[in-house]
Length: 210
Ligand code: GDP
Image (tube, rainbow, N blue to C red):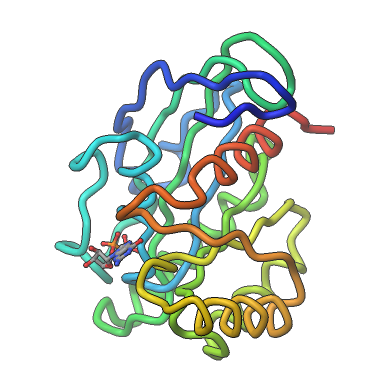
């Protein structure tokens, strides 16, 4: 775990909480939520598993594109950005976009949950995941534009950087930052690269709320 502002972070517990099927099932217990959004297959489940240091906390791939609202995972952490002390965060895995299999109903469900989530005052921030191998996808650019219209802090995360050569990586990260108009944090769930930076971002979003 990182030393964020010189303070060690420690993961106390990570667990699956619920697969919400409606806005009414979103836990509202004062623990901040950080929502993960990205194309289907971008690596959301893998990143959640890597953050939890568990292989099977979040299911990878099997249900890609299947209709669901949000899978919620609770992380209990000690220390990190914001000082010592224990804190918790829900990571909310929202349905992936850019996948047609679910049909019109799933598109409507996705919009509903997104609207429910992003108007919910428990939301501390959004992690927008983009595949480091594929800069310039219209769906990612559209999602980034949409996120800027919401009143919620967003951090952009590039996934799967382990699949790129050094030169591709530099080129793609630059292209992504330019296209999406924001800083991009490189990560790789398979080898843990960038996870410390990601924890620092999550701690900032969760613990430094206005
Ligand atoms: P999700 O649909 O966004 O939850 O995506 P998954 O986590 O299921 O990942 C989709 C595919 O990408 C799976 O085959 C993963 O093994 C693979 N994957 C995810 N993250 C990484 C990564 O950091 N590096 C590599 N090489 N593959 C990854």
